[in-house]
Length: 410
Image (cartoon, rainbow, N blue to C red; front, top):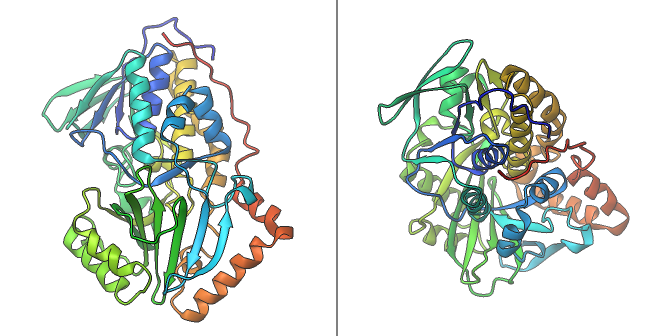
């Protein structure tokens, strides 16, 4: 990139130490801009679900020099298996049969491992002002900058604040307005956690089972064969009281998975002991603009499409690369950088947020007939003459023209 270094480098605050926040901080650092990162958690969050890199996000990882680290942690996941209540195979989707462009991609890595790769690269590049256990509580801005108050009580002024703090972004709430104005509930909840690998599970394959009543469970392999990742998808009405009540969340899971067959009882039994239990609503975020004055949003904070779309990590890391590139190219005109960020990322985000046909209703049928109908449709798409159609559906962003924001490490 042709960075404009004719003026003093801007003071930038990144709220959120996840993939988007760390990726944008890394690219800014490589362009000579040392940001401050605040993360409410007291340490990096390990584990997490498997995420994939393909198309533009894979290209970004290559350009950012992340692939050597990613290869060290890359998961050996070979495809997807659907099982019935007794654990018998119904159908199998081989990753290689879809050229790594199906439900399972060629490059799969846990969210925690990918974040650690970014943190390692940040340290290698000289590091930034990283503050764990800190968060934003108030924002006041004018035409020239942003005054930020933190949870610790400290106040500081920045030229730009980047909110990369997730679906329930506090940065978005403080600068844009209440979450309810931008969030659309998509009909259910998802939960993830690590558990011991059940005996008899086929290694290296992502196994799934649908059950009557609008619930689906899955078990994904982990880098450690002794552990695996449980995935629970529940179709139900919205209940705001679930937001921070882990006991109520786990009770809902017990009720929906009761008598579900396959490994449902095992998942429920191991849930309470999980150290990384995660539960949240499936929701989409829609904003007319990703920036408000000197505050700009990135990743799920700006354009969450929900896990149903399967592109959250792709949008976060690609958005970070674009945002950092435009900031570095327009350090003397940050408002223009934010305009360019939305112009460049808009087409990619529009395609990345597309939900699978039928959305959550198709994924979690309420009846046995609906489950069988969905499985029959999937079998049809596995038929060799129709595979190109599925590959096209799963690769809608591959024609995205990703600008080159090459930087030299400083």
